[in-house]
Length: 303
Image (cartoon, rainbow, N blue to C red; front, side, top):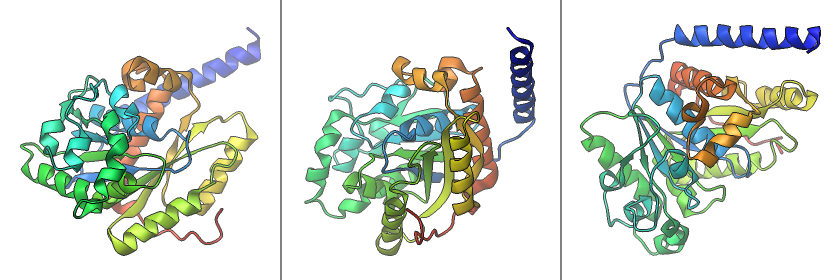
């Protein structure tokens, strides 16, 4: 190994140790009321589900009680959290149709003792059609979730809702049930593609169904500091959304990519990895910021 390469590796190790020490000295405050957060981006491949499960896992490891609601028919969040989601399992599908309470679908994950999941099953793929004829079809998840949280023996500090990339009744239910929206944005070409449409949809939900909904958090994912492109994208996103973008960024990481294939979060798969550290830092920053970073966001002038 060349001297320059040795120096670079040494610098990375020193930085990693420094960041871990800082994180260990940071106490993450717990919210007084549950923070209900929908993770959404209508553009695929941005790390939406990966961000959902790894932030939830990170917050659980930092002392919070966390619930993940898998509202995506693909069920990838359920898989990553080690939760069974075969068709016969009681799931969020049964909750939306009113056949079961949320407590009946709740499962503790294999990831951490503080982390629970309401799984998705393939049955959810047909729920869009079945919901059309139901009363208060946009409010089904909100009603079930509020009843569950009101009756829970121990409080939940965070609820993450992982929704499909398309805008249908499932995603509308996720927006109506939430107080906050978290948007992961990848540091690659066309990063802001479709974002105006997403923000426009959120504003429609604010206007007609959930006036309290706010975009509170934007997380930069798949960041490669070695490329000018990633740095340019990060600068562009921060210039548009200075109050919402977290300082922590999620790097492009083999460990983050591999973890789902083993049915694990990156923390369970390789807790010592730089990817796991980045999600812990993002979680700590989210906890420190609280819900106050949310704001109305205009879509004017953005592609």
